[in-house]
Length: 157
Image (cartoon, rainbow, N blue to C red; front, side, top):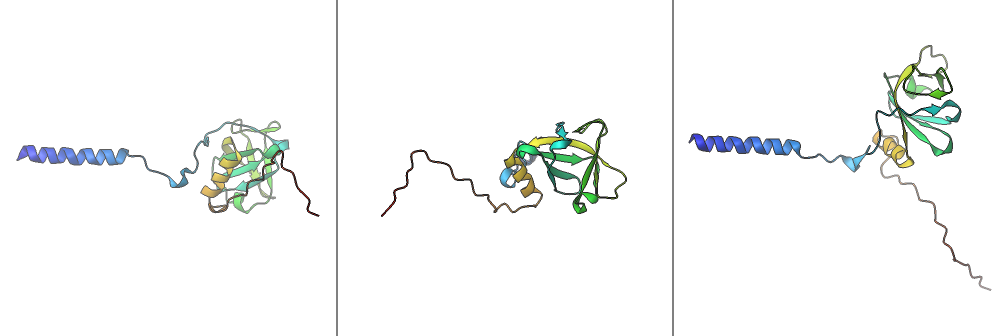
């Protein structure tokens, strides 16, 4: 009888361990290949716009269709409500090290430190916008038509 109970207990524990080790599939595998602890820097002169994702994360758009995923050290309510952004840095580069801060709002007196900056592709930026609920996953951008060599137009007349 003890042998049967030991076998059942062993089977139960084995099944529990195996089910806990099985990989969980995330919805649409959002956020893959994105470096969340990046140490990239952004030239302040190239910053064109920003999109707040939540109270702690934003996407900064630079020149040449470059996008950067920025994580702040602390949450900032001003991030979502502000239409203006300023920087406190020692040089012309915004980096997650060296004490650089982002100041949101017109009358803000203190900045928010930067935890991480990661350059992301257009696809990764779109995945982040979907993940944080800024765009619907069903909204797909139409791809630009490709040029076909050798196609000629015949005029009727």
